Length: 394
Image (tube, rainbow, N blue to C red; front, top):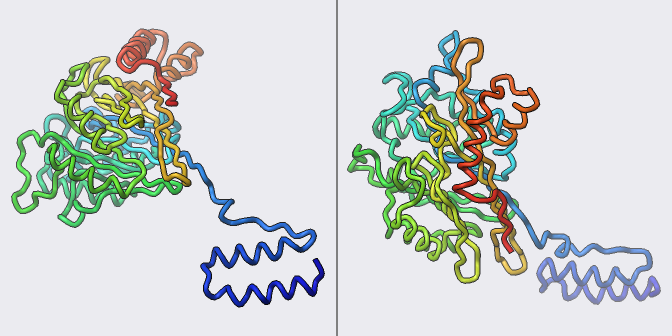
């Protein structure tokens, strides 16, 4: 094409540009420019990602018993819990977004720091969560009101000031109506969270919106409202019977109903032991439920009560079809390990298989071959409950 002809084409096209969208204008200009020798035009629309994969990670209940609180007390009276998650930080950060459940109040020192049965933790744990890689702390559980409504609101303040999202308890009706939706690489993920109760402690009559009770009709209504706004809908439920290895029939029925209603994933907490999980196919789409992820960190006694997991879920969105599918579910068994350092009792979460290998290689400073039977039993028990650690969904 001659230079003169190219200019004429451009002038003709300019007369139509005013009535076109920006994208249409770019297309016309690009077509004209393609006639010039040696000019390469990149179609901006085609450079957009057509497929995007995101990873969500999740852990179970984080408790703050008295021995855990004392383990973090420093000489100057402050608290530090940096050792809690140092060995699992990489697993938590495998996710683009990560969540856990926190069963304690952050009500301040005035009423004292206490463990079970009425928890109140030092504020330092909020920073610990954030620095470990958690993004979301679920605050709705049976210990939400352990220091009353005032303490529960302060808990939200402290967690959010540390840069953490919260879900399940709210300051006012406006907050309660504003669903938590995260845009992760263009994939919109929504979180809903509910608990069966508050250990009998009353929710203030003037603030009924404060606490998301595990009410079937409310959950179904919330799913119906949130579903059109998100690509992935995560439901976190504080439910079930403590220390029981299997969910109740009622839980199973509710789980299937909520998945059929539009939830993609159900993350269960509260039993303090790991319970089963399953893939549920709904209208030819794979959904996932784990009835209990167990304790992530605690000072409870017993192998099962100190067993947990870091759960990893991968979702892929096709921007052409706007369909988002669950691709993979994997988990890493963990163990809440009490140990002594310089004569002081401390706590940490360790990945079980990596811990076994470190012991065998003599590389763990706080465990030796005498600890192998415990870790091997945790691994066997977790595998027995959850099956193989890798689920590829086709």
